Length: 369
Image 1 (spheres, one colour):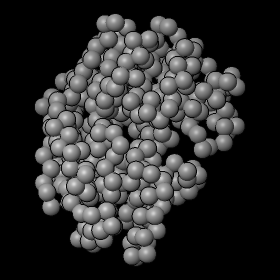
Image 2: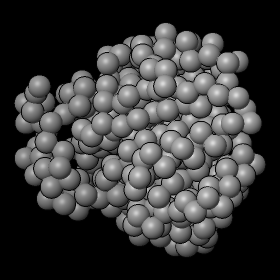
Image 3: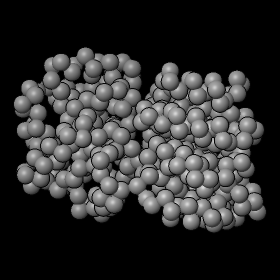
C-alpha cells in the first residue's frame, strides 16, 4: 500500500491527517489524489460511503486553493446538512498546519439570514446542499463567478432526493472553465444527463474494486420470519447485542415512528431520525447518540445519510430498502475504522429474491440465521 507521501501529498497535510488517525490511503484516495494533483480535467470517482471520499477530494482541493484570494474558489455540493457539516469539519481539520483556508457550510434547517451574514466573511470553499444554495443565489447572496473547482459529493443521492433542477441552476451559474469532480456510489441513468451536459468528453473515471464497494469486515445475515413476528425477532436480536449501538432501518417515516415507539415500550434507549424532524431536534438526537445516551437509532434511508460514527456494532434492516444501492449505504454505517460489524435483514419469504439480487449485484454472501 502506498503512503500519502508517495502519492504527492504535502507534509503539512500528512501531519494533519496523522492527527485525524488517517495514515494509509484507501483505494479511492490512492487512485484519485495523484490524478487530481497533476491534472486539471474533469473527474468521476465511483466509490461507496465510508471509503474516504472527503480526503480523496479534500487534499487535492486544498493544494490548489490560493490562500491570498478571498473569493469562493471551490464549491462542494452534498445532499444533506449532516454531510455538509461533516465535510466542512474534515476540511477544517486538514488545514491545521497549512496556510489559513476559510470554508463555510450552508444548508436548510438553519436561518438563512445568519448564513448570508457568515458568507460576508472571507470564504474560499463553500460546502452546500443544493436547495439552500439555490435560495442564496435567488437572493444574490453568494458569488460563484470565481469558482474553479466544483465537487459533487454523493451525486446519485442528490438526484434521488429531487435536486435535479437545483443542480441545473447552480451548475449554469458556475464559470464555464471550472473543473467538475463527481463522486458517487452508483452511476444511474439520470446521472448521465448531468455528466453529458456539464462534464468534458475526456473526463477521467476511476472506480474502486468490488472488494471495497462493500466493506469486507461486514458480516451479512438474513433471518426469515412472518410479518407479524418481525418486531419480536428484532427485539431478540437487539437484546443479544447487549450495550452495543446500532441503527435500525425502515422504509418510511411512519414505520420509523412505530418501531421507535415500540422499542421505547420495551425499555430500549431508542430515538427516531427522519426527514420531518426539525434541524434542532435532529441535532439533539445525533448529539445524544454520539454521547451514548441513545443506544439505537431508527432511521429512514435519506435521514441516515451523513451519520458517521465509528463504534456501531450492527445495522438491522427491519425492511429491505427500495433501491439496491441503499443496501450498501445502510450496511456501510457499521464496520468503520477497521472494526467488524453485522448487517442483518429481517425478511419474509417474498423478500428472498431481493436478497439473491443484492448478493449477485454487490458480490457479497449472506448467511441465513
